[in-house]
Image (tube, rainbow, N blue to C red; front, side, top):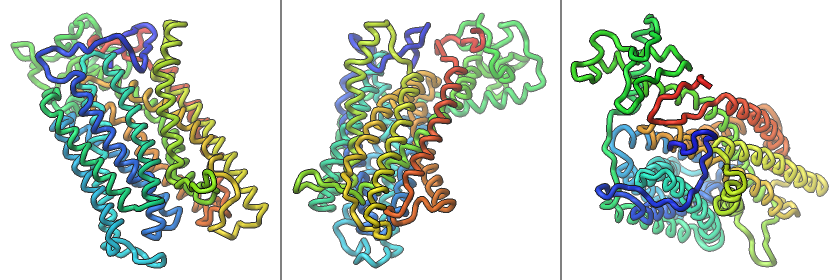
Length: 558
């Protein structure tokens, strides 16, 4: 996504007053929006409804220990967060977004149907609270989870890239991204409240059955729009272009870099008088023209010996992004750890809302989703427009990410303080040895850290999507949106590893949460996120925006 404001690189999340400039002879445009966003809504509602209370399902119906269930949830979340990158790579390299999205939507439907069967047929789960699940029962459960991972792989961010492909105007793409996140979080709120309440209070079969029906409607919504979708043709495998730069640069590693601009090979749209940047200058050798590299018609004769200056600069951009990408991993770890451990906290606390209503443990995370959705709307409709009117400036993607990280630090500290208070009450009642004892403390104290996390997500997740889509090469658009999937995946897997290390190295996390020192884990996360924030600030100071995707920019010229 090329920035329109060249000097300060500002990029509002939503721009208004611009109509799509999709050429009339192409399919696509806003007519595709209802079909795509319908799929997003249905898939997200199905996913959140099925998985929002899944830790409770594992504990009650499969007899998992609480920490083991939390660890499995982190593995599931990690896998389902990483799989969208694989889906994006397949879309960019082989069969485009639409077939991948359709296949994954059907895989997701199969997953939810299997979960419905495990809830409805007693032979598919342990017969009582003291029986471990059989190999067949675990196999069926893990098959459903594997299909769930495949389902998220081709829909969660792949559909986002496909939706952006339908729109030619950058401002329209920004509008789409904003609506994508609003619908995504709104569906998550409904899934974690309404569906989870049905599962917890009425019937797991009914809850999962509703998820299956909604998933089926999501598949139908995607299929109904097939005749309207713009489907860009696949070009050269983008990852082959990256490999060619590396191979060509290695082959010419002993070559002296010429000073003349004409010695480098340029694309037709590139300025022939623009030399490659001096950042990672060793890669520039891949674009140096030697005898036999260029055919008579001016095309590349030896693709593994010569690349364009633009291809070299694209690889440099990807390398420059890596430090910023790594600086968001700790945030993902903290969010994943908070999400899984807070459910365990809620189970031990007073969840009553009034004299009759008992809020399901899995529904407390809805506070984060609702806050994110509400904050996104406020930012889009009030804060960003006000900033632009007062200063002619809106926060850049990197600034949004930084603000989100600051809120995340506050959220971890708030979680530590709430848990400290909970543990004091346990100690005062001498209930450390009673794992099933309900602490006389309202679980709604956990709303505060969830709200802070939600505000942070409203800043840093859309900021990351905008940044990657803006800075990645044009031929890696699906992969660019999939980068956040890798961050989430690494975060969930690392969260699992972090919890396991804490369990082995300390006594903070026994199976009995009432005898734990969980607040120490949150304080550890607070310190980690604070150090990471300093690292992020350093990375942003060193990063140079790619100002124009059609003209090679000397990154070190400023």
